[in-house]
Length: 209
Image (tube, rainbow, N blue to C red; front, side, top):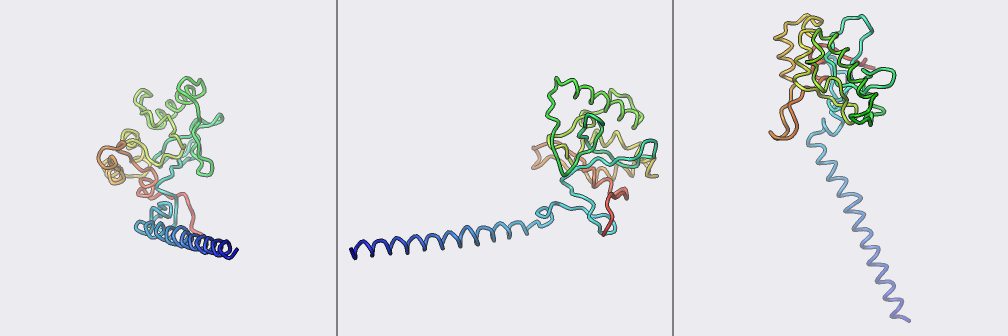
């Protein structure tokens, strides 16, 4: 009987020891290590927030929202990719409910949206519909792509120069400053961050509180 009790107590002590050890390792040491690593680049860990010239947080470098202007008003913004909806083919993304349209290449609604978008972009930029790049008329998988292709950015240069009272060379320089190359030299494609360009142009979409 004593041997049974002794064996039981040893098992309890061993179990408690394992529990305490795992609590320290997985409940304290591991979270602390993850937190410490995140502090190496705390800007990215906190959502890559961007601030305007007044220090106001105006958005994230990782989330793209297409800026909109009232119909008929001057349009000084660089535009991002779209999300689209049954009511508005140029609908901007919504960070609170990101999602793709889930419409395939043979979907008639998607085909109609693409043609409508191509016409809208061509009229906005004063160009032929045939030269509108693919990312100007299609959304990303999340609907919140923060970047556009250099081709789509270059297409917007004349309008941006005109509406922001800058020269085309100044606009191109701003775009170049906010263009990222392929990751590690071989992954992805060169891309232009829309929010960073709009901030460099002096535009903001938030108010400090």
